[in-house]
Image 1 (cartoon, rainbow, N blue to C red):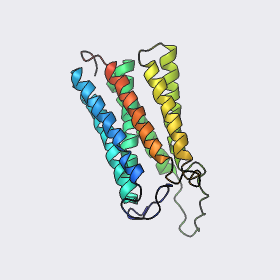
Image 2: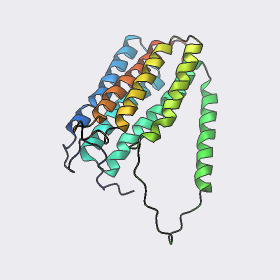
Image 3: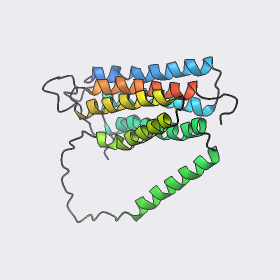
Image 4: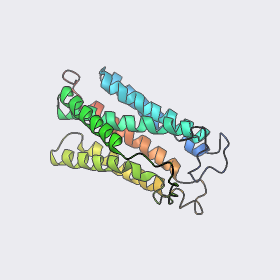
Length: 231
């Protein structure tokens, strides 16, 4: 991957200049606002657990990283966009299981270590590419890169179903967050396809709705965490 190569996959961007995606760039304020709301609520409830504040910091970093990507639009800035997102997804999954599900942290750490080990073994087992073989041209991505978020959608649907079935206090927070994410993912997917209809693109709504989703998830965790017994 060329970390300096320009990236142009959104409708709003018309050239490689820094401010070619003003709506996509500015809309990342939604993530910062979500983090600030969560920080305010956590301080109000006197929650000082590092795990809660880790999620708040990751939420803010999503906004910063995505801003960098939609301004510089290069390979390295794409990493600043993707890494905080998946860091938040993984951290929220593990932390919510511990805080809301009452699962011991050491059990979660064991499962995480097992998953990482399996991933490394799978990567090692992959056959090495043959340098003499010409690369096969990639077909256009009909989902505009949104397929990578399918595991997150599945996980959120499962969490919502379990929470509703058990009548957990977070159930409606999770349901609202899941519905918001599914709508935002649809708008991200059709960004390029709708360029002729809406030249500014729909990716801006992906940011605004995802900021809302993260705000809902953080509030669900913060408002239902017992500060006396949480890990």
